[in-house]
Amino acid sequence: MNYTFPSKLLERAVDSFANLPGIGRKTALRLVLHMLKQDKEHVLNFANALSELRQNVKYCSVCHNICDNDTCDICGNPARDHETICVVQNVQDVLAIENTQQYKGVYHVLGGIISPMDGIAPSDLNIESLIERVKSGGIKEVILALSPTTDGETTNFFISRKLRPYSVKISTIARGISVGEELEYTDEITLGRSILNRIEFKSKEL
Amino acid sequence: MNYTFPSKLLERAVDSFANLPGIGRKTALRLVLHMLKQDKEHVLNFANALSELRQNVKYCSVCHNICDNDTCDICGNPARDHETICVVQNVQDVLAIENTQQYKGVYHVLGGIISPMDGIAPSDLNIESLIERVKSGGIKEVILALSPTTDGETTNFFISRKLRPYSVKISTIARGISVGEELEYTDEITLGRSILNRIEFKSKEL
Image (cartoon, each protein chain N blue to C red):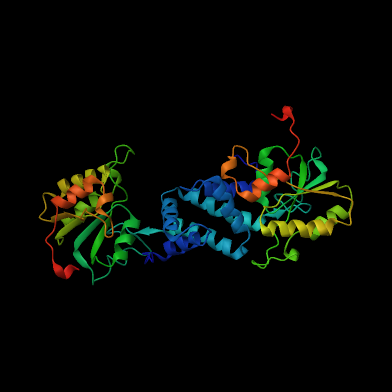
């Protein structure tokens, strides 16, 4: 739909929203008209939240997670296991893993994965600072928690080769059947790997 | 998902997005992190577009359409047919009808429809100003172009009764089978009405 907007201000706001990923012009218009029905204060607050975030956002100097200070709450927490680093692609992944409440170590956010197709080289990612963290000692294990895609595997391979000179255990998160998934509908690569990488059955695990 | 955000700024921006209709917290997070990857200028521009729209938006003094001046471009256009008023629910509907390029009259935006369930009474809508427009003369036809729902029909009925004292033709947009729709899958009320309200076949229409 190529609307001719009755107002330049409206058109500019709709264009802004329509530039966001996954939001078309029709949805953008609906969102903007929704905002026009809200209190003025509410909308100014929204605009403010965005500009303040963009201007004042900080990244943890250790793990590159988003934070409000110099180091993030996870890196600054003495109760966490600082000898284990979980390497993830982005901030969403940190939130997802934190949400499981199963991991007590620290993180390292790469900011993406190596992708020749998208022109993302190792130097575009926070890989050098990961090597530095390991090099400076005190790290026992690096867990590679990247997506099980070709790009993810390439990145895993690149990082593990870079880390080889240092005496650090390297692991990846387990691939296998999701909890609640039916064998019948699992893709064959996942199913094949889950048989090869079978684990000892412990009745207390149930 | 109840994330514990690593940054208050991030949380505030995500909350703002998640308050919009149809946007959940996961999508909100994705949008905000997308914005963090954009140029600072781009994001400030976005925030600016929203706050400026909300602060400076104007509504046409005649038809209540959104505009930048006192009257909108449609009401101010001498080439339009100012004797025909098309009554619509909201601004989106004006854009949708304008997009068809089939209508040359002017509009009247109600700002909603009468809905007892949602607590929207006739006095909440721009109905009085429509009656005033008709009362002041020069209007030949009022087209009711509201959604074919119970609330829409109620509003149609209310407006047509209010307009009865004035010598103005009242019409509604045609209900019937959509172009390209299959008879087999049309709901029975629409199909029944489309037979009752059949129109004379003119070969040149093809």
